Length: 78
Image (cartoon, rainbow, N blue to C red; front, side):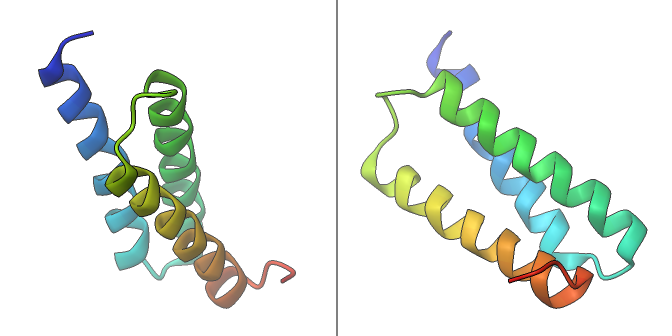
């Protein structure tokens, strides 16, 4: 996988998370949260051992944000 592919995949999870953050309609939000979680999972798989500290921290932060959205907007258990 080339550097351009790595950059695109890094952007994919970020864009997916941003889309979920902007959505408030529950049905759409559920779909977007799933897409964001999948994008993060895929990025972690392909970047295993290769992620920068900055991206690792950003992913950790994004997962906290996604979890908070699940609890606050979709009434998931805390």
